Length: 30
Image (cartoon, rainbow, N blue to C red; front, top):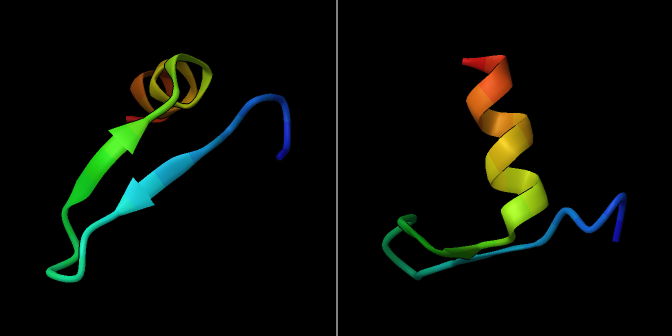
């Protein structure tokens, strides 16, 4: 993974799990 960026997407497209690092990056990008 890139800098601990990992997430799991359900078949319907919803994010079921996202790593803490990814959450931080997404929070900053929004």
